Length: 385
Image (cartoon, rainbow, N blue to C red; front, side, top):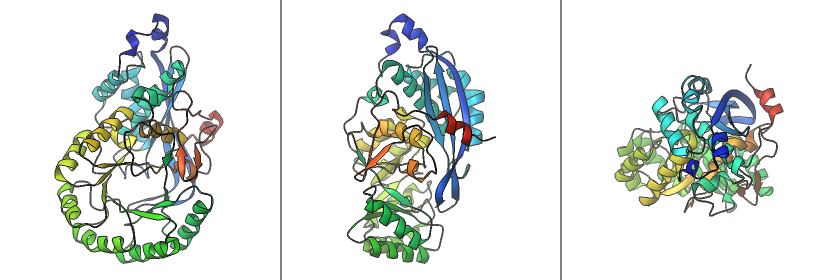
């Protein structure tokens, strides 16, 4: 990233310093229960970050979690506390447009805490983009695609409800690929549910599955041939995140591509997975990697290793989704599309104009910064008291 601080007019450069940071916890109800192997939620919690620059421009960012510190070690409570006590003081007074320097400041102030860092970095990109009148994606090299295939996750656990939900998405031309969350029930129950979905949607939709680390190696070995027979095209994180060797062994016998998610938080972990031959695809998430720049780093390692890229999500609102799309829109390859359906599963989005879904694609916003505007009334309404 060029040192734009050196080439901007002096008055504008001073105005780009970080003047204030505010972090707010919000809880937004979901339209239906979202059930993973180890947790389920009926409301999604976020930390919404606002960064105000010396010029008065405000940037926004978002950190998402699922069910508290159960998907990763961060919770919205810990994210806000870390921002307030450690990360915000490290950024106050710093030049906002020096993104790499800001990243180093945050890394020096706190280890990991990737969701918190990702929210702050998103807000920096948004504020600087708004100041200069350019989309955040321009700071990452520009876009190569103006729409991205987007899937929907079926995660209620009720196959009848899920078939009806999928039919509605197909009829409205919103989604034609569906990720099915499995692992909360017995393997036999999961496979029976998948069979009902596969029969009901045959020839009209594509299915992938996500076990969220629920299986051991023998269970996965037994289940994978059945998944292949049902037409499942991708299996996400069947084994615990630590079991890279097991994923590699599984991959040598699998007839369905395997995707790493929780196994890959950093570029170093991406390199470990690549060296082990433990995945065909990797799921990218800002909350895992720590921001837009780090997400690009992980993608670059995967691309160099010939590993496919998939745009993962953690039920972000349009704020978090827009930050992801700023990265995804500029990747050289995004063969597996993305899953940023989060804005659609909320009873209400947090922005004045939600992201656009049409013809089985999500359309990245084109306005300056992240291209979305926080709705202050909704922020007040959903803010945790």
